[in-house]
Length: 114
Image 1 (cartoon, rainbow, N blue to C red):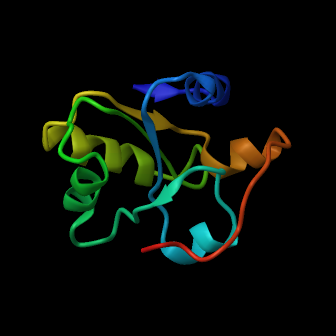
Image 2: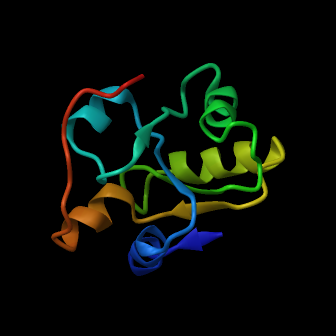
């Protein structure tokens, strides 16, 4: 399921458990990312296992994945991998960083944990 920027903001402002995952390489995450997001690059060999660890095995947890922009396919690919692995509520913020920054929303920079 694709999400708009406004839908992402609404979900993040809610009180539910939601994981926001930046699927771009660590270098891009370190340069700029959405506050509160976690860096799990799609090209990591153990991408699904890393997400499984972050959710403590709860495959019904809401997960939002994002990448660089509407033209970047990484978030859609990540969503498909997670759904095939049995995650039931995975959403794709297609606009990604370009859409987020274009709206003047805050970003963070800094070294990723991964």
